[in-house]
Image (tube, rainbow over all chains, first blue to last red; front, side, top):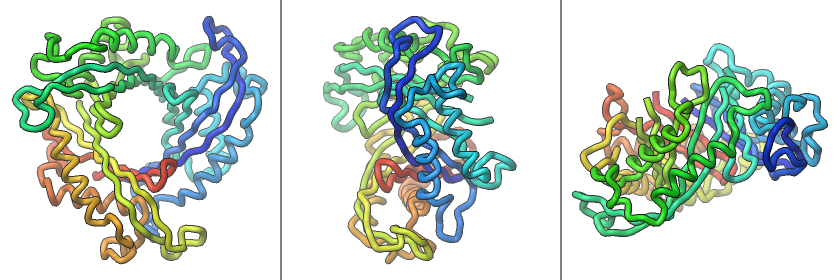
Length: 128
Length: 128
Length: 128
């Protein structure tokens, strides 16, 4: 089995609704994001998939929320938690590269998204 | 599936009994520790669990061994190896938040503890 | 379950054959490599295995390709992709410590190799 991980980042404002603590105030983070792809076979060039293609998709999705207030985006009505941001980025990449959706387990698929709010706090989304 | 990871650190002295090499001498490390929680569902606020609560528990456990000689602590009679320290921290967090013990797999649980002796050497404990 | 992870690095030149993009030009990286071992039981000293032994083997394998042009090495005829480099290092460690090959799942085994081409791009090989 092989896995490939690429990185992107974005900066955004957010606050958490119905939360008691510092995060209920509007603030922001320099978010770091990792996209992980997993698969069984390498292509003829010895690659699971091209780092560059995956990075391009990840960056395109992050660019959509870069320098925004996440609370203004419909997807985050529940809350722009790191967990929900990871789901948002997962769905954004799948929209750009539908072939990365997990199907039979034979072809390479997007198996995890990591969102770091800070270097110390990470949320990960793993689609079923 | 969602995962959340938080960090703490502590500094302690230790040496390894019955070991031939540099680690048999009393020395110390700035240990870095990560606690990982995993679960299927987000709460109404879009969170697997509150980063802050998990960090508080992790910090409380690390504080108990911060600036100590680990060899003086009963739990480490076998040896204060990074693997054993990870077990110690796991058990300490479960004592503080019993709900994080793995049960039916439906609710969020503490699924791994990482202990870095140095940036290059990591041990991980994953309870069964 | 326990895991241990150690690190090494090496610097090498490479280029990708049959690739359209910057990587088709001869260039190089400071590669970072992590070897992960997993197992169920600790030894009498409280260790899954000795960090030092694993690091020694990982370093010996990395030294073989340090300051080389990876494209000149027979193993990389297909391409010196990060995925293939991870396989190369896996096989090199198993040659040095055959006991780390996965067998019945009871004894500790080498379960993953990470190769970072840059801090942002990682490939991982997990033997079946």
